[in-house]
Length: 311
Image 1 (cartoon, rainbow, N blue to C red):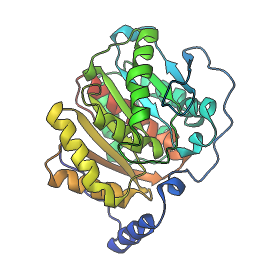
Image 2 (spheres, one colour):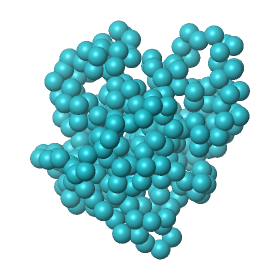
Image 3 (cartoon, rainbow, N blue to C red):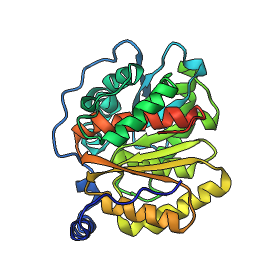
């Protein structure tokens, strides 16, 4: 699918954003600017708390939450990764990031009861995009997914090799357990991975390194740099040569990573890598995660992993 064109920002603004990003480390920029609300102590009904003991070569114990609807046997599975704001608060808080800090339960409830209204996306949506989302929900009601939300580490080594250990945890430990606990579909065509900011970067690194495991790979406002365009394109090309998968990048008009995400999309397009680029209104913060971030992530994966056309 052809990439979406850059929205009507001035060329000077885009160039300044790119220059600022190049001088800012991923470690600093991937943290959202506003504090998150306090997380609750235990998973409410519908969510299961999963603990994983450390194994040789891993950085330490892991935690995850698993949402397993009652009819999970017919549903796909999504691995959703949080941002750096939760990573620095520890494994227990991080694992609850999508549920507690990003309001995922409220997002899922609204998807089950369309039509969506502008306030469901924090008023960070165009009329055209809102109509597309509601048209998709009108044609095919949201049926749900099993969703696993593991703690996403802030790795010092941000390369493909540096993400390999976390990737092994996701593929070899998290997915088998999530499937066993929920009874959800195990096919790669029914398995997706996504994340926001730091989590978006790791979703790309892990997902594109394991095309035999994931049928859909997405990234929301991923913490990437323009200079990494060739690296991400090469990773995507190699993945697509092994197994075709659905690939999408999502950014927003005030996302500091927008110029870099645009550069990666341009390189993917230049190299013939099929993907989608979506740019929506909004900043890089918790309000965006609770609005268009969550809606776009969940609905896109649910459509793609059901074999439907996404909005």
